View 1 (cartoon, rainbow, N blue to C red):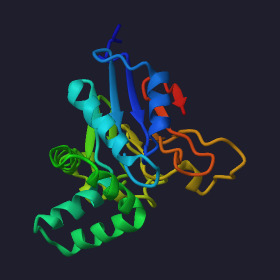
View 2: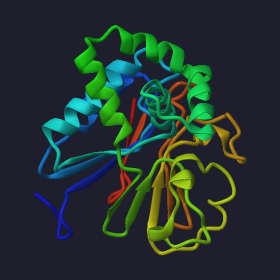
View 3: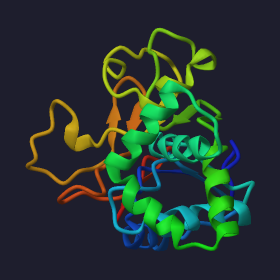
Length: 235
């Protein structure tokens, strides 16, 4: 049964980074209920882990099956993948060239190899979908994006670059009433991380929820947060 505001749960999943087995384990725990739940993936489905294309295919299929209940946001790794393939189509800018090169240096070579194993039509469908993903989503007082924001700018005026790439210099300065929900920066890389505790999503006092728990890192986990109840699931 839905709550008074709409969905029973609003589930935000942090960066998956090719960790397919952990993705499946997490989804088994969630018992996702389309129609009652809203499921939001925060981007970075690919690279670093061993099964990037299987992860990309999974979220692609799920979003196509339940378009009203599943939101897939773009991450910076999808930006890099898109830049690579757009260049192959003859679309060139200096920034795209840099992104494409960076992708190959940050896990893209293996992801590309896996994509090349697909039938051309299936590969094109996945790449086109990843290239056209939204960079932000809002549900009530919750604002979802992959990376971060400019804390000095209204949420409806944010640049795509900040939403996809921002890592430092915003969390400590945000003072808004809306809750910002992001991935991108593993909690293990935060300044106060000691390494002596299991990585868990962080709920900051100034209305920020950090969902990336470094799934590809040693001891890392894939995490999901129900932003309404603040319940956490991990694999």
